[in-house]
Length: 119
Image 1: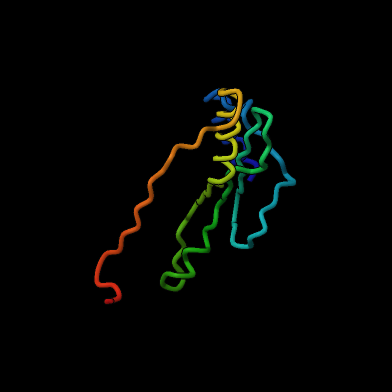
Image 2: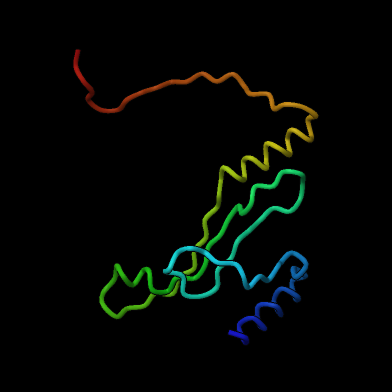
């Protein structure tokens, strides 16, 4: 694990990304299928704080539950909290426009495909 961390920080330094990363050993995700590193993404700019906007981690054993016995498939996954991202985008638009966000008029069309109920 220490060698993996050393390599990670070498890459972060080489790509001039170290200032954007916070290494936090207290971070925990509540799912027991993670088998390695976990991560979260947060937005630190602006006045609106929404917590984590994304997260994920390594889960090597999860996919194996759905495959033939004994087969291990290395996996890494991520999810994005799209509503939190939209909240941040709306806040930024409000700051740039100096007021509320204008909502466009929208026409809604509801259509069905196939045979529906007959009248």
